[in-house]
Structure formats: C-alpha cells, structure tokens
Amino acid sequence: MAEEKKKIEPGNTIYSFETLENITWHHNWKWFLIFGIILGLLILFSAYFKNWFGLVAFILGGITVFILSGTPPKNIKVEIKEGGIQIDKTFINYESLKSFWITDIDYEGKMVPILYLEPKKKLLPFFKVVLLNVQPAIVEQSLVNFLEKTEPKQDFIEKFIHFLKL
Image 1 (cartoon, rainbow, N blue to C red):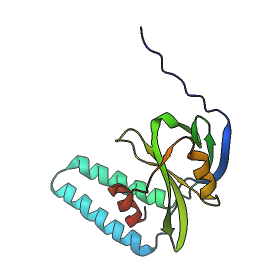
Image 2 (tube, rainbow, N blue to C red):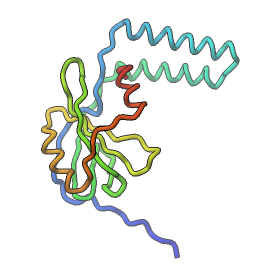
Image 3 (tube, one colour):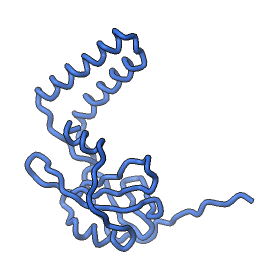
Image 4 (cartoon, rainbow, N blue to C red):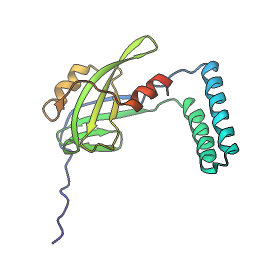
C-alpha cells in the first residue's frame, strides 16, 4: 500500500510580527560602475570563447541584479505557530528544520538582528528573517520549545553576498 504523507497542521499562533522581506543595501554610482565593468568583462570573455550559455547567463544575471537593486523590499507577515513558521505565504514545519540562531549584522552602521533557520536537508539554503522592530528575545523564547538553538554560522555564499552587499 502507498503510504500517505502526514499533513502538518499549522496550529495556533504563538507570536506574529511584520518585517521587511530582506535588507536592501544602498548602492552608490561606484558600486554600479564596478559591477558593470566586471559584468562587461565577463560578457566579453564569454563571447570571445564562444560560450553562448555563459553569455546569456551573465546578461540575464546582470539584468536581474540591476532590477532587484532598485526594488524596495515588501512587508511580510511572520507567524510562529505550534506546527511551524509561516513566512508570508510559505509554511515551514518544524520537522523539516534542524536548528535556529539569531545574530546581528552591520547594516550601514546599525546592528540589525537576523533569524536564521537551518533546514535538515543539506542542499537547501538557510531561511532568513529580518527582525526589524522586533525583540529578538521574544522570537527566541517562542522558538526554543520547538527547535534547537545553535551557535551562529555562515556559509561561504552568505559571507560573499554580505561582502558584495547584494
């Protein structure tokens, strides 16, 4: 017989708040100039070596970065529930998460707390929730009953994205 997947019910809301979906870095003209020069060189190298897939990928990637750099983040609702975490329209059950931690990042001279949720599957990226205008201690108290709190860790991609201020 085929085994049915057990559907996780969200349950009652323990704590909810509204926040921005991400932190946007304010890029000046120097950032755009350097990014444009590097992108242009990558496009030229791809064309010279007849790497058409790379050429298309760099062009589309560059367009995407330029468009997203000017798009302000939207407000999202985050709900910590008995069965998991609802981030905007996405529900993540606790059974698919391994641990969480809260760490502060420097955002233009101001420390901003970020909630990281680590999935059990190794290939999935960390879920990040910006905790603007939210007490991190309340979020921590709400989650500690369901998930293990671990020491902050950042993977290479996370450090690279923070370095480039993407």
